[in-house]
Amino acid sequence: MSRLSRWDVKYSPYLYIAPFFVLFGLVGLFPLLYTAYVSMFDWDLLGGDPVFVGADNYLALFSDNQFWTTLTNTLSIFVLSSGPQIVIAVLLAALLNSRLRAPTAWRVGVLLPYVASLVALGIIFANLFGPNYGLANNLLELVGLDRVDWQADRFASHVAIAVMVNWRWTGYNALIVLAAMQAIPKEIHEAATVDGAGPVRRFVSVTLPLLRPTLVFVVITSTIGGLQIFTEPKLFDAMPGSNNGGSSNQFQTITLYMYQSAFEGGHLGYASAIAWVLFLVVIAIATVNFLITRRLAAGSGVR
Amino acid sequence: MVYGLLIAFVLGSAFPFYWSFLVASRDSSMLTDTVPSLLPGANFLANAQRVFDSVPFWKALGNSVIVAGTVTLTTVLFSTLAGFAFAKLRFRGRDPLFLFVVATLAVPTQLGVIPLYLAMAEFGWANGVQAVIVPNLVTAVGVFWMRQYTVDALPFELVEAARMDGCSMIRVFWHVCLPAVRPAAAFLGMFTFMTSWNDFLWPLIVLNAENPTVQVALEKLQSGYYVDYSLVLAGTTLATIPILIVFVVLGRQIVAGIMQGAVKG
Image 1 (cartoon, rainbow over the protein chains, first blue to last red):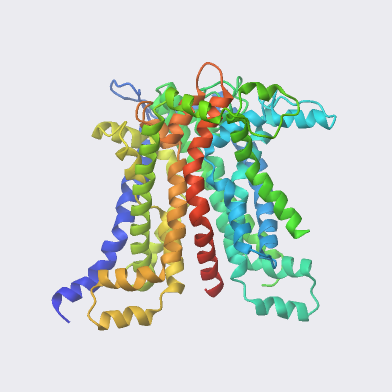
Image 2: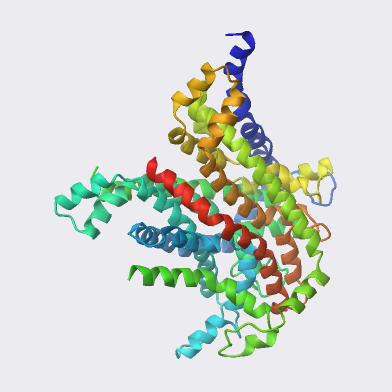
């Protein structure tokens, strides 16, 4: 082998993986760490020298009512969206995994919502869940129920936003789960059938435990995405262009509050403190979810 | 029963698209009807014309095509290269480095937008499309996905044989690896294009109203004094049509290709 060829074998792999690591360092890791640095300053968007304030931004944050409101909103919307979404996605994947005519057409069909942009979606759902003339309220009235103010009522607004999130992501997650279901060898199911297990029993005791790695992946990614929700609440607001998340911040999320503080208020230091706290919350909840999913999926059958 | 549930789900998936087209093809007065008609009206083109008059929509479409196109090409290329290296090449530190990639999946990088904005302003890149392109050139999900697929799809013997024939590494990648992982690369490409086309937070921060992407233009369309839904939903329909076409034309083949791979693997 020539020298050139030996170099090729030795160093090419590093060259091939370099783009990811360089880019992640520059636009992923560095900004995240630098956010912690900015959060210790009084730093104005429009210029002027940043003033070091130590932990003051964090102290202010903990006595800031709006911060606690947005944190509660974020968690509430997250719970309302991620739970039902994953349950429905697994059931939908089970449906798609049964013998179907034109299987690919159905798969493409359930992926359809993924095409919709979040901005378009926010606008469309703000319209469907309009406080006065929305289709949702018209339907409620048609079946004899009271109209709901989807904007002003805090819980109702969370439900409307959660519906939006579920609508867009359920099909996507179902396809990921489906891919994992198809990788389960048929022999395992046949063996369980021979042992006298019915379809429900097979699903609970065979399929679910084998889906564990995939479920962990789906839960973690939807946790990370769900806690950073921004576009849906911003566009859902009946007040055009507003970053308030409703007149009394009833559906403002943390990311929206961070955006408002930084790019409407100009307080980059304070906004960075918000971002850093959210970062810790995301990591904490993702870890807890990881542990729970592992336990649950492991506890329900063959080991 | 199974078909009934699936049909209900797909109809539910399609309905908001149809609804926005419906409103866009009429005028906003239809929204006050308790039971609105479900047939489209005749005003779609007029409303679409108003979209182009209100915001620089052609420019926005052009920008979105440039951004999503570039990001898709580079993400697929870099992810496939890295996936090939992680799956089939031996080199020191491979496994810890790959673990690192997996760990970064759990890092909410969206929260780093403030320093990223400061950096772009420093470079003088703010308000330019390159500020939207560069941070998205390659993703951890892409690398992870291509690695997982390449492990099963590309036999070691094939790589060895090509090496024996005197192929350089990059030729092995191009002529042996790439053909074998095409379904996964196509799938990644489709998803990257859609994700990039629909990206909002970062473009909203770094671009202005004169040089927007489609999503930023849509938001500007909505933020008038009061919301004219026929106008705004004409905009969302226009913004969705290109990507819907890509999806309908390529989606079937791509999803079919990748699911076959999953069965084999």
